[in-house]
Image (cartoon, rainbow over all chains, first blue to last red; front, top):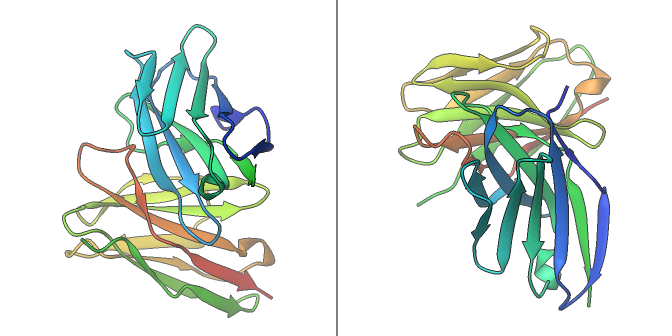
Length: 112
Length: 113
């Protein structure tokens, strides 16, 4: 089975709000985590990653938080824009593996 | 730099037929992975090739096969198509040592009738 899962299938927000997308993982050996964004009709696109020796990593308008104690990962998007509407996937990678395992995805809908 | 290119983008087949999908990775990327994406199962890993060798394989039947050429281009083949094979097939490439940072193509949408 999958080691990574998403808490909610759909998240609706208003433009300008902050969005938080959650993800749980079960494999304590996972040491690398990645977020991908998939827009309609396109392949997934790498957004941001974080290693298990970190708790937080920031990018442009995005922040990933990692809580290893409860095996929880979140993606925060600041000032959400209509262009952020997409399906977001978390993925994890166990040390030494070449193959990330993807969660089911959360559909983010941004209302203008 | 050109992205990952997949062909064909769309195709329709009937049960029992076979199909071959092609993927050209980003220049310099030697690892190519294939994923099947369906609404019910999400992204399911098929196989991964590196330097013309299948390095990893997912839990798919033997009807699903692939190969990689010396220029890193890859093909996957599905024989004896079933209705359940209808899906978006995604190819992704990555640099050696950057396993989690996948660069995906736009996929090949296969419909089996």
